[in-house]
Image (cartoon, rainbow, N blue to C red; front, side):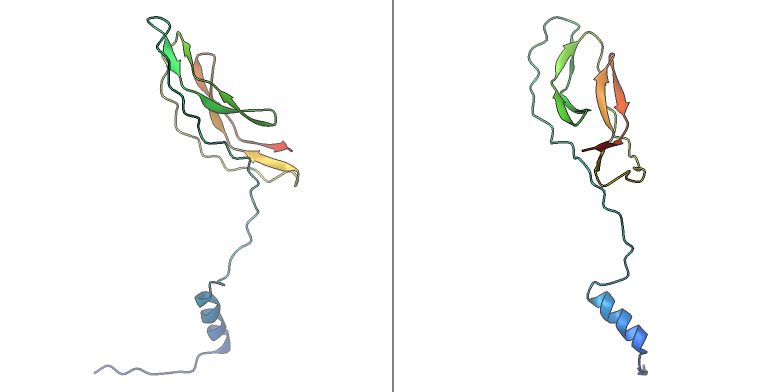
Length: 123
């Protein structure tokens, strides 16, 4: 036979249980990450290749100075591998409230995919 023993809860335990039930658990303050998000990809359809041996570089967003810029898809003479997976970067501390974080991203340059590291930019 099971017996339930009831004991009075301490005031601090009662407070913790109420706070947890109300969603007010202890949370550490996290710095807000002010990010300049990359826009959604644009839909492009590759036109027929201009000649045999031409390879399609898909359009993609790249950061240019103070904003995102769409680099339209185009043909090149080099074989184009798929864009690599995004590299996850941990941003360093924000230099000032006037800075926005721009995540790293891949861009096609010099016949290959190049990783452009994330950075803080003054806005």
